[in-house]
Image (cartoon, rainbow, N blue to C red):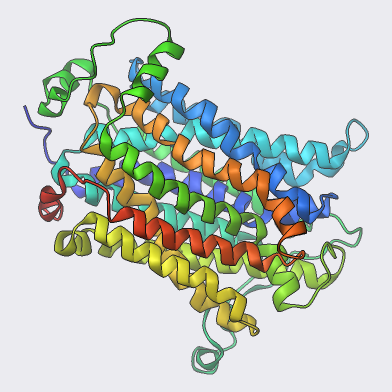
Length: 474
């Protein structure tokens, strides 16, 4: 029995929650380094603080995948997990920028790092079931379109999260998001802000950032509730009837969950192993970009000394990074609409390879830029790569997985996201100090090179049901 084709409205509804998750995630990505540096972290320590995300992801996502495969409640199979994750993530978003108020109990930096950990655990609890939900609900014919729609909403959520601090502050000027020549055509101000203070008189976290994290918590929880209310899940009995269930798991049926995860890992499909190398290169690059873009732009573009976090220039650089991250996410949201069409013409792996090349060139180009207006061009390339990273590997993977183990394998696939981030986190700081001569921008250049290596590795991936991509638009 084949899974029925779902209306586009149902596919959008099941992915709305990802808009909220990504709004919170983008707030963290664009501002965590800035907040931690403001609370006292050294540039060389940033990668170690950011290790919390991949380490928790490596532990949490396979466990959530394993248990959600075996869960059936009144809410469904996957929905209970991302609802709990959303509640916990919202609490972390509210508390992290307010870490300074806990200084009477613990050092503010410790509290900030602790809130970062809570958010990362919570994002991972919420994120993994969403990937599995799309694979659960959609047939091969709709998976590329389904993951592309998910990417559109991820991009829109990330734009909201990345731009929130600027929108609450002075607003976003045309010159911030378009090359200088366009500002005279469209006017000086694109979106006026609310005028909330963007610089703290005490050198702490600015008020616009604190309120942005509060708004992000509300958006996150609201979006998750939308998906919970509007989306139904197939029962275990229905799943067993679908033809995708004919991809039986290897003969293992019993044992505890650790043994089960270990055996599933050992028996992962060939396509999953091939995609593992692609993911390693891509996420090593992304981790470097997220951690080091703020200090790189502050030092390389604005000429600030390393760890000069108290000057107004550092906050200006931090606000600009938020805008730039919003731009690459906006590009990814637009490009995601085109992904099913491009994949139908040239295949998913070639689409992904070309997209990673654009991202690699975008990251490397930052080294050659002196005018901050020109950073927009770099973000276009990054946005193209980001859209494909969020969609194509999962679309290629899903066709090779047994339906009854979709959750666990999506969780195990996360190893290939977390291990490269852990690797970068461990070696990034020492390399910055000893090899890159404290030039943070070199971390972005190396990230771009890894993105290009990922593009090459993609060419060797076997996409079993790529022939079905041409039907995705139906």
